Amino acid sequence: MDQKGLLVVISGPSGAGKGTICKALLQENDFWLSVSATTRQPRNGEVDGVNYYFLTKEDFEEKISKNDFLEYAEVYGNYYGTPKSKALEAINNGNDVILEIDIQGALKVKETYPEGVFIFILPPSMEELKQRIINRGSETPESLMTRFKSAYKEINYVSKYNYAVVNDTVEEAVKKIQGIMVAERCRVDRVKEKILDSKEGIIHEQLYD
Image (cartoon, rainbow, N blue to C red; front, side, top):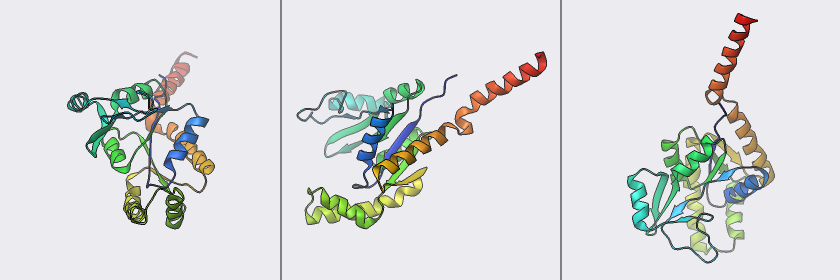
């Protein structure tokens, strides 16, 4: 039986660079990017099924009742969620699925799909994180302080994850994540069927050779 793909969940505090890392991973590897669903209206240039799956509130709530999401949340009056069936279909077909998501969403996914690979992206230092947020040029002094305080709180959740990757450079962070995925594919609980098949093959050869 072919090995299933991995669900790789990547999150971390704002400014840690998780979005940039995910883009680099997708450029270098044949991964399947999980597309979220939302009830908010599409913005200019956004395409249904590419940026988001755009649903009505009624359709979204119906999917909630059917347990169709790995996780979901309501943010500023709109729902956001990760469709379960499409991600699991890709995984069962042997595709690795990348999911970039906030920390609360990641912890909900862990409850639903604990066999996922949960990776927390850390900045090299809090001072570097602060500088990255400042360099965006989109924060007021008040919002900067709010984001920075939030980042301090979010880093406390790192113990809930399987791995922590420090984003010194995007290239090195991507290499570390690729290494994690290689190691995960070699875990005994992921390849036990292949081990049993090999064991049966060896016994068969010993009996009939």
